[in-house]
Length: 254
Length: 348
Ligand SMILES: Nc1ncnc2c1ncn2[C@@H]1O[C@H](COP(=O)(O)OP(=O)(O)OP(=O)(O)O)[C@@H](O)[C@H]1O
Ligand SMILES: [Mg+2]
Image 1 (cartoon, protein in one colour):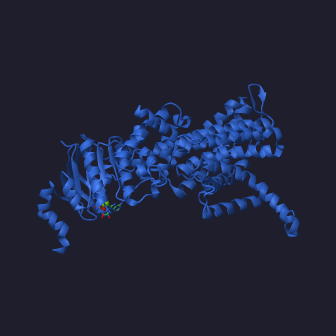
Image 2 (cartoon, rainbow over the protein chains, first blue to last red; image 1 turned 90 degrees about the vertical axis):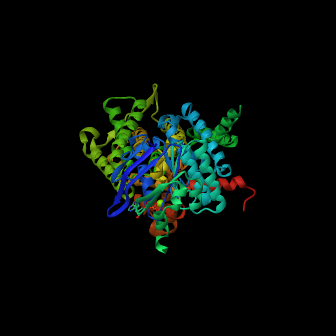
Image 3 (cartoon, rainbow over the protein chains, first blue to last red; image 1 turned 30 degrees about the vertical axis):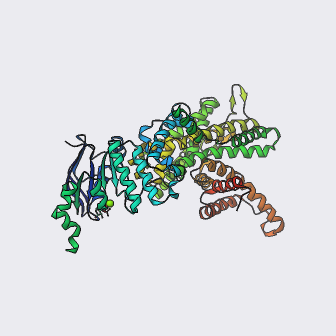
């Protein structure tokens, strides 16, 4: 059994069926890509996985336990982190503070020790700051670490958001279009980071991406959604040859 | 060794007072404040005391509204709860000053939590209406629960004393208020730059992202309500001792609006902003009055026309002015002045 089991997952918004009985298994350590045309339900799937949407049917099992009804902060605690398709950073805070917020679950000081700022709270700030600086080094964003995120260019903000998710020390990392809107060089950088995260940190990654070059290059397995229905699953080579996938992508032109 | 140096540099990074210069400047300023009762006019001391009480209450509101983004139009209710708790405990049970103030804060915080829970799902206009209604309910209660609050007859407070020393006169109470302001300012400053404060700002800016990274919205919104109302309650307790007399009319919705004005004009989501706003709005009525009298000397039709209504109109005008022209408030202006001086003489 996989680390993450998605079983007959359905999600409806009134009449719109965003997800229709989707089955998907993600193995530990795997880089699993989810692809599909616009509006296929990829982001909706992520929103179900991290508790923002409550599925209308089916189940999601993490380590064999259902997480479908849990609140987002609870799922975060179980080790699921994500980035968003439209960057969701805290724009007025610095890069360091954004990443420290990613450390929220690993810190424990409450309002009283925080207000005193001696001993435990201070130690905790310093320890987690070190962890944050490691991530900053890893993502090569040292130069902007004290800048408010809102002032940074798009490509860098994407990296910072990846950093905030990494700061959570996740077991499963959900990336929603990590290279969307990037040039070739930036795309290669991110692809390299993603592979490093998978290999060095042993993190399981689920990635939604439209850039087929990147997907075919780095994914171990691919699931294809179309209008909320899973139409294929397999290795990159299998997916490239799958007639249903080709039809879904080129459908309008044929 | 390597990690040691890392830690030291981070420690430097997160200090409140970054440079020796700032420390020196602040020490001088506090020393100056300590000397104020020795030479200042009693009226000046009176105004500073009132400003101190406002600063504490405004700081509380700024934690809830400015930092956590939960608008409250009922802050006066918590100030009233603190004031009446202190007054009732002091007059009926004869409890000492040092117990009545934290008790006032505690009772206010308790009600803050009670109000926080039903308000969890409310945002914006709805939250404003709910908190305002709470303010109205508390105002009604203190006015009409005569057996407890003496209603419109008001409560006369005993003089505060600590360790046998009377704190009755303005000059001595000045030090009490100053101590509370310094203590609560430091606590607030520490709070907002550590884990809890970051979570507050995260909730304000993007609540969904905050929840995804593990911030429990329920818990943190309620904590914010509790802290905010604790500050309000302490301010109320100090106010009741200082004024020596409590009347329900002191705690109307206008007071809540005044606190909102303080944090807007001072600077939303900034500790220094609450200080600026609290002081500014406390002294502004006197400025208006002086201005009106000055005008009256030259414009006969304005002579002797000044009344309280002018203050309210001016507050309104100031809120509009700041919202439109300077949304970061006095704190923002102060920040620009500082940058200007830092770069001096390389200004452009
Ligand atoms: N909150 C919502 N309310 C109503 N409909 C929604 C909501 N969220 C998503 N949908 C609908 O669900 C369907 C799937 O949307 P989703 O955002 O998951 O697609 P996607 O695969 O991520 O597309 P894209 O590649 O454009 O990001 C769409 O038809 C969309 O309009
Ligand atoms: Mg999407």
